Image (tube, each protein chain N blue to C red):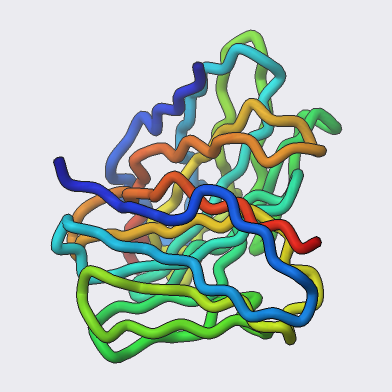
Length: 116
Length: 112
C-alpha cells in the first residue's frame, strides 16, 4: 500500500523569501515521487520527479526536492518565491519502477500564496 | 457512491483505427481532465474542460480529441494521428474551490 500526506493545506510566503512545501509518503517498495503544480484554471504540470537516481532533484522554475528515505519525506523547496509561483502543488507517489505504469497516489494538495 | 467511471479498463486497437475512451462522473464537478501515463513519466495532460461545451488543449493534445456536451461526461478519442497511443489513460475531475482531484481507475490502451 502507498500513501502520501501533504502536511500543509495552505502556505503563505512573501515574494523573495524561501518556499517549503512538505510531503511525507508511505510505500512498500522503492517509490517514484513527483511534484506537480496546477495554476488556476489550468491542468497539472510536472515540476520534478525522483526515480531512484540522485536524491536531490532539480525541477523547473527553480524548484528542487530532496528524497530522504530515513524520514520518508520529499519536501519541495525554492530559494526565492516569485508571484508567478502562486498555485496549488501536489505530491505524488507510485510504487512502480520505471518500466511499469503503477498506481499514482496524489496528496491532497497545498495552496501556495505569494504576497508582494 | 459518487465517483468517476472509466471504461473500458483494457482496450486494444489496431493501427489506423480511432478509439473512444469513456469518462463519466456523478460528483457534480465542473472541471474534468484527461491525463496520459507512460512508464516512468508520471502524468501528462492531454485535454481539460472547465465547463460544458468548452475545453482546452493540454501539453500533448496532438492526435487526440474530446467533447464536453454534458457536465457528467468527457470522452476522449484517440485518433489514428496519435503516433504512440499505447499508454495508460486517466480521467480526473475537480470541484471548484475544493482541494485535490478525484481520479478514475484508468484505461489501458494497447495498439496491436
